[in-house]
Image (cartoon, rainbow, N blue to C red; front, top):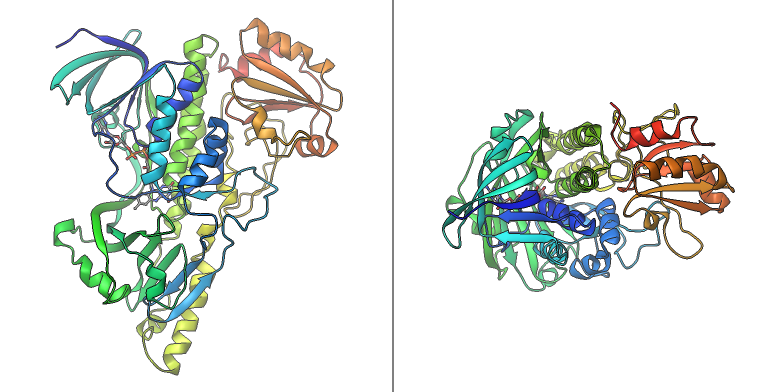
Length: 539
Ligand SMILES: Cc1cc2nc3c(=O)[nH]c(=O)nc-3n(C[C@H](O)[C@H](O)[C@H](O)COP(=O)(O)OP(=O)(O)OC[C@H]3O[C@@H](n4cnc5c(N)ncnc54)[C@H](O)[C@@H]3O)c2cc1C
């Protein structure tokens, strides 16, 4: 055994969440070590949707263009097709513009992008490893930890050299998707349904698949048979890589026992030349952990929330956890963050994850009209009517999950100890509709500045105090209070009337993660109390 290594933050797991946390800490000048038991090779495609909030993070990290280049090509149709088989009956088609064909959006500078983890995780790895203070240790398994007076002693197994070591860390963050000992050791209990259904995914290579059927190019094909909504086929690179997914219901079937060829023949066609690259068995859950932190130990990503991939929220929610936690750990290590700052991580993120898990689970109910389903493949007018009925139900009930701006951009931190409410009512909650608002707790809204940047580009390292309509002079007590507590804060005067109207107050304080934490028309009577509240020094 070697002597104890030391690091301010030890991260377990180099999935997208652990890598994002390492990168965001690295950007903030915080050293960290990440241990990952595998060698980092990705054998199977999981998340495809990099939603617009995650793309906004990527923009901040300077990799948004790389993500766009790595994902689905800009001219590939993003349509969603529901049919009985590729050469069967069409039931419903949702036409969506290609990435290249979209007009700019008013609500975000970054539209969502399809970029599978096959391509996204390596970009995050490259980003994390670009920071000198970030140490990535692949083939190194985390085994156990013991809390100490000033942090955590972590036992890891260097698999490459078969050597056990202790790493002393001030903070431990488990981004290991619930498969390591950390959640158990913290006594985490899961709220929700641990098993909704079992699934198998086949990773396929099929060249020019669209030339072999009559449904045309689309990003998603969902297949419906007499049993209801069944397998799906999802494009991964706009070329030859596909993911074919099937639910095995309440039966757990090992990949070796699955008759994937029979399913491919039934839904894709008998003469499709495909190469089977890998098969993954996975379990659909609907759970949120009841504990996200104990002392110096934190959990993030799939280690605290797991749900159906429908809607494409899982990875994106985990990246939201990483971005929320990163600046708080940095503030604690830099000495200006108070104890409530670390408490606020769970207070802010657990309700957000709870809502997303609920919404992702709601889309799981079976199709309702059993009589219509029974006739879904009938080659007669009764079959035509049945297909019309099922198609209508699909369009009414099953496509909401593809428009989720209200969840993606409209999430907010209501009961946070470090947000100062301003008494205004919250906008109505909606999955699909996002109402831009600078109400405290919300993501500071996007607007284009005169110089071509987004307002979001202003929020980066420290706090930003936006001063509208000549309010910069009124801001000085807040700036001085921040200075006296060593809180990094930049004053940004803005004189754009449209942006002033959007933000609704003359002074708006935005946190390092881009969320508004206070706003008013004048400096508060006690500016030190405000700064102490937002830096977590007051409970
Ligand atoms: C079929 C499918 C489709 C999906 N589609 C989407 C989608 O479209 N959009 C979306 O946002 N999400 C989607 N998801 C969910 C998404 O894949 C996960 O939410 C995401 O990968 C979670 O990231 P993570 O970093 O928390 O965990 P993971 O990606 O699971 O990474 C955890 C890492 O921890 C490592 N680890 C575990 N234990 C240890 C240990 N003891 N020591 C060292 N390392 C350890 C593991 O090896 C692993 O690399 C999908 C999931 C599935 C299964």
